[in-house]
Length: 253
Ligand code: PEP
Image 1: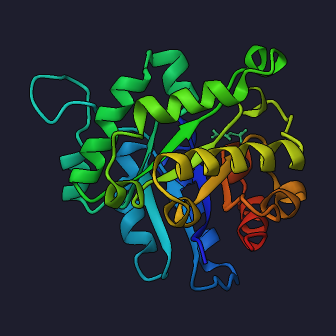
Image 2: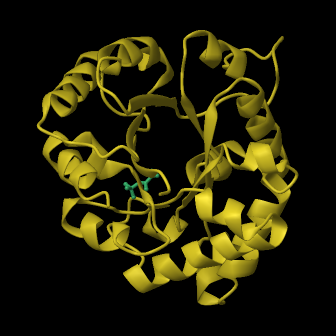
């Protein structure tokens, strides 16, 4: 069965003390994960190493960076390379979150470079894609997302694509309290899987985890994750609350 993942995206929130206390509360909770379940915390860079140490005794609890540089190394002040992440044993990295695309000018081609660097360094990229409201209102969401996949992902080999996790996050649902309906989420996830099948093959498409992101909370997680092609979620706001996020983890199928 495909990996089912509950991923927290803390963004630029929480002090170090608050962050570690939140992590400790969640990992101390009575949560029984199935073999194919993973819980991933995308934490700010300065907390990565401590977070890794905090979860290491809990199987299938893993730590992610929220971003990485598209350059290998060198004179790029303020950037963090995938090689640096690898050297402290970071397992995952978000790539192409819509906030990075919107506020920091990240484009599909740059994201292809980030994906390549993650894979070279043994880091699982969580590749984020999704359309803005205007695109959906014009019913162009499929071609928009297909282009994001084609320009950032589809140069990868069969072996490489199997190491990628995809997160579909409609921008109009991120941090807005609006969620895509279960039908809208399932429809787009099935579309992404069919694009993977066309580019690679059915066996590959069937193995890739596709997460949904956009105002997931305890109250709607079970219904959203229950859809056939939805393999868990990437969660912003609700992941900052231990009780909420624990319930979201328990909603994995
Ligand atoms: C996100 O940041 O990826 C996200 C989905 O945020 P939220 O859950 O707050 O909508």
